[in-house]
Amino acid sequence: MPYIEDFLTTKQEEEIVEAIRIAECDTSGEIRVHIEQSCDIDVFERAQDVFHILKMDNTKQLNGVLLYVAVDNKSFVIIGDHGINNAVNTDFWNSTRDKIAIQFKSSNFKQGIIDGVTEAGKVLSKYFPWEHGDRDELDNTISKG
Ligand code: CA
Ligand code: CA
Image (cartoon, rainbow, N blue to C red; front, side, top):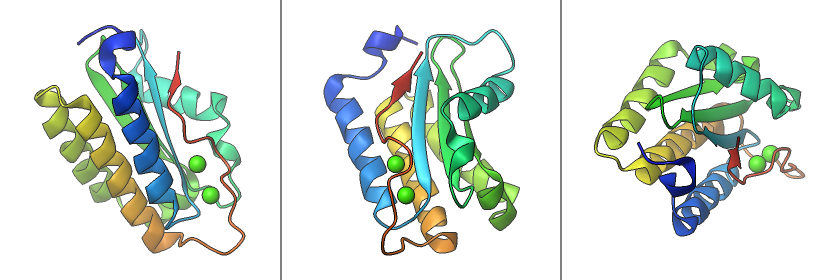
């Protein structure tokens, strides 16, 4: 996989942020994407750390979803907070992961991330529909580091 700077073009990043914005129009849930160069611990553990570092465990309805990518490890993880995990079963995460993986295998990283965001948005809208007065609790921009 490429260096983190080249992993996505600016335009691709904008498309992902737009996909997050659109997904969040239908749900109170919050979706974030975090990309880093490499991960020297278990990627799932690292994703959980990042979830906490980004304060994603502070949403009102505990309905944050994080798509974490470690470029060198060729790995990604998609995880959700307790609110969403209580609502969906593990099949949802597995099928979403498979959709992302299909695109990543062909190096279509942007499309994989967008597919993951869109799938997460769909399920979030079912269990956590957008409500009047909903706030954008977590920034939609891609975080890196
Ligand atoms: Ca929100
Ligand atoms: Ca947001």
